[in-house]
Image (cartoon, rainbow, N blue to C red; front, side, top):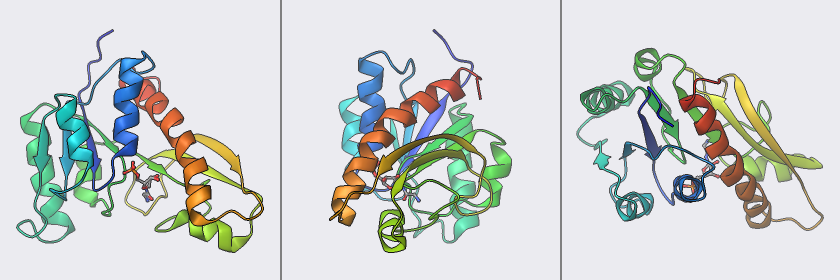
Length: 193
Ligand code: GAR
């Protein structure tokens, strides 16, 4: 199947969600490989997954493009030059500027390791443990100008178990992230959301 869209994945670090997209492409749950992997961090291990899978990578240097607006403008230039109209944030640890949101209306999504609107921002798993909730999970949502405030697309729940640490809870949530994010990307690329 073909999509009229082209998408970039924005990464900053480990890249397990990006890798899960490649797995999903291999086993047929996702019909589309990313067209570009863009990063703010040239040593992100995520870039290795991109290279192994033959996907172009692009580093936008935050030291050259200082501040949110300049970073967004540089990223927009790279994306437009390649005809990319869709962005999936996957462990991209920068707040997205309004200029980027305005340039790709309704076409930017993110995965967050909590059941939004609960526990936005950093250290969501730690926030959940400290709040003593009985369950947590992950959320795929549209990106707007706020921090993790955009409309929810999909969620998956996991129990918080007795004796959980940030590591054990994160691992349980991450398994669900890897399942639902490719599903959401497929729906976005097929114009079903
Ligand atoms: C994931 O758990 C993702 O949900 C989270 O960072 C991790 C990235 O892992 N994102 C956020 O917290 C965004 N607010 P990955 O690089 O292995 O995909």
